[in-house]
Amino acid sequence: MMQFLSSSAENGWRVLGGTIAHKAVLLSEVNTGVPTILVLGSEGTGLRPLVERSCTDLVKIPGNVDGLIEGVDADTDVGEEGDNFSGNPGLKSFLAVESLNVSVAAGVLLYHLARKDACTVSDKPSVALV
Image 1 (cartoon, rainbow, N blue to C red):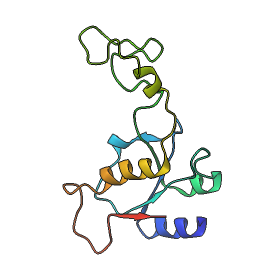
Image 2: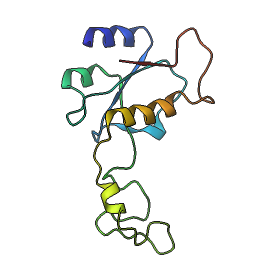
Image 3: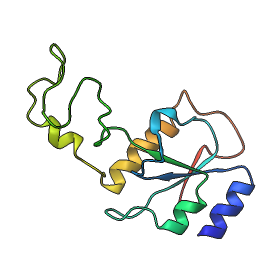
């Protein structure tokens, strides 16, 4: 696996690993339309360390405990007055989700990476799954 990922990166592919690690960039910051190999780990344990080191970039899906929804305090279930989240009892549970089912994560990542407006015509597909 690592040899395949390394040789792919040398041949111009971006090897993008899905993770919840703090060092990963947010999905919204990832360029689309770039030939990409998407690597996802197992549910619960994620990417193996050697596989993660073989990735050229790491990406995470926003919405976990990082408090990525402005004006919302993950500890209180209450946001700023007038927002759509104030008093929502399920919000704290939503913000506490650390990982998604791998098929759900794959769907979210692929949707972003392969959007119709983001794909360019090339001899390589925009996204390959490993």
